[in-house]
Image (cartoon, rainbow, N blue to C red; front, side):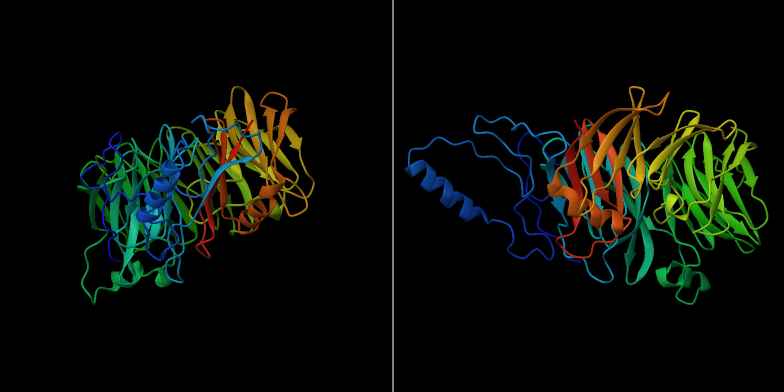
Length: 463
């Protein structure tokens, strides 16, 4: 797609030379004339000055946090929306998926089908925007030293990977995922409609990992230099997970294996775990400790498996049968229905959240929430687990702090009734992932964007 013209950022935030920074008022692709033009703002200023009034003028686009006339942020009640953002570009049938959300010290960075944008956590003010050189088809769930890895589709094929500095909004490098000829049978494996398993990317330990149906590649995040490649004839690669270590998953016959990649010698993994016959790894919930959600199909998760540092099984235990109690996004890396913290895993269920000890699988406690709604574990802070229950058209959403020791509710913040429809739509589409950062509850859309009115980030004062 054509690049939008570059504009300078305000003097206090000079953009890196490789970044495509767009002002909030710049019309992005597909936005047409929705944003106010520069001459319109100038006219308003002239009229205001002519009337002799003294006003504070604030930048930023629609949905920014409210400001008082004195120049400071207005007090926003706990549970109310501080700000929210909708899609900056018009999604289409072939460009609507939006995986990818990352955090720096004071920003949330959200990927859309053809761009990435950083917003200030407190105010929602845009910090930078970066137009992508294709359509997003995969993104790492993690960031490594403020660097992420994405995969882009061009000419109908997911064939390019790129590293992005999310603190400054700059491209670090871009290169083909795999080199092939037009008549190469591997070419079809890079077409999304042909994938027996989705292409996945992950980052960790200063490296990036890409897996696709017939191979994997490990590269350095600094410069994209390839440090290893593993083509596969007998098996197929089914996923990648990152963070404190890089894990590659592949399927050989009726067994799934998990390999801890050694960036210095990708062909010789540090360890390899092999699952039972017919057992699938549905999600990697944590990479240290390694916690796997296994089962016999996406709708039939059955066990949680914890591995020791050498890859040997430390524990394995059954999960209660509850088809509505396991909600995972696409890809194997992480899952919003589970949260691993230390030696405990918190599991979302319909109407409750349960804490299990990873060492033995014993239930520690169960916090009972609304009977008919999922209770998602979001974050552990100061000895308390934040549990989020999404709103519905009839019921408001809730954010409850629960004691990690007893499972008892310490306090509950009821979300504004104005957010009920937004929450319900995101929850119904199973596209929202909740985060708690700097006193702000962020509901981030990591699924498909249906229109330019689709919410991508909703920030709520956590209280």
